[in-house]
Structures are given as C-alpha cells and as structure tokens.
Image (tube, rainbow, N blue to C red; front, side, top):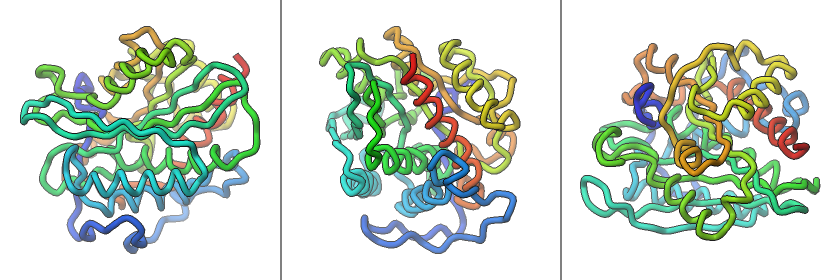
Length: 319
C-alpha cells in the first residue's frame, strides 16, 4: 500500500525467533498462547466464519518467512494457497505473468477462487499475499492476516451448498508491495492492476458489482476507519453491517486515506472498499519492520472482520 497513509497497503514484518521457512504440507510452527481477550469466539457466533482457523492459516503463511514477489518463499506460498483452495473444493484460476519493476522483470502469480452464482454478477474479495522486500520481514499483519482470513473465507464458501445470485470470487494477488518506492513509476499493486486488466478484457469487470479488499485486519486492538477514496455506498453497507453485528468498536467512524489494491478497480469505475487498519500499526511502530510477527495477531480480530465481510457479501447479494 502506498503512503498517504500510503505505505498503507504494503507492510513488512519479521520477528526474532521466527521459525525457518517450511515447505507446503508441513505443520505450522508452535505459537504463543492466545489471551482470553483475543481468542476467537465460536464460529457459531460469527456466521460460521472461524477466526481460529483464519489465525492458523495466517501462521502457516508467515512460517514461509519473507515472501517478496519472485522469491523462492513466495513460490512455496503459492503452492500452499493453491493446494488449500483445491482441498476446499474451490474452482481455481491462476494467472502467471511478469511485471516490469525497478529491479527488472519479476514473475508473479494471481490466484482466484471462484464460487459460482445463479446469475451473471460477481462480488470480488481481495487480499495480497506478498511481503515487502525488506530483511527479516515476514508480514504477519501486512499480507499474512488478510490472506489467512481469505483462506478461511474460501473454505467456508466453497464448501457451502447455499446458492447465491452473484458469484463470489476471492482473489489472492501478488505484487502489492513496492519493490523500491511506492510513489515512483507505478511501483506498486502489480497483481491487482493485472487482475483488473484481465477482467476488463474478458468482460468480467463489467459484471463486477463490488470489490472488498482486506489488508492489515488481524492486529490486536483493531480499529478500522473508513478509507476516504473507497466508494461511499459500499463503505456504508459494510459499516452498517458491522454496527448491526455489534462491532462499532472495531469498524469505527473515523476516516483515513490509503493507496492500495482497491485503487486498481476504482480507476476503472468499479465500486470498491478497502478494509484496513494501517494507522494503529504505524503508531505502534510495527509497520514494515521485523516486528510484524504473529504475536501481534488476534484471532478475535480475524473473526470479527471475517464475520463482517461474510455478512456484507450476503447484503450485496440482495442488491
């Protein structure tokens, strides 16, 4: 993510004592105990969304270590995401492409799980799974938390027998982070720009009713303000849903600006909203540092955001 809270979307973190990268299929490393205050409520209380499972998915992603675009670690991450989505029974499309960056051409991959609907419309959920190219940055909150959340979302939606009017696509995009400098020569959001362009060519973009991006949504003490550039009616729908569910303390009334993957769709006239808490993480001093580690992640926060996004999708299905 850029700054303006620009650095917003692309974050970095690493941690002393982080386990070495693991191969796809290995068990997650041991985690520190979760306090009672940050434990996920039962999935039966959050619409079926399991915050504890989302936390476990996040931990597994973080265990691969730093995951900048084009690295060996992100290739392992891609294999893991694909294997999980296929195990969930999702229909999955991938797009392997090369992006021209300030350090040359880098291979990247977008992964999209597709849950069909009975009609022609599409609701697109988004996360980025890459980490910024910084030493010892494992991105537990920035890149990890939202991708762990979307893996749990995919497990829930792909296995459900419920029929919906609109298809739900869950996009895991590469290359959100700047390779060198966010504000220079479009050095950012490579994957979402690629996805938006591909959808425009295929004709799927004009079928897209709304885009909900999640980024930096798993931290302790989560407070998500309304992102100023996001589409107003879509923000209203999400924040009203959160209020109805009792989460006004998390989806707060303040505002902040973030340059992020949703911009790739806003520029093409598609309603889009960014669900993100960058400012708190910056204030704590964790953003884009080796301290962006799993001890900062709350299963409760993941459960709340997952519940709100899930219910927001249901609200969008009625429009």
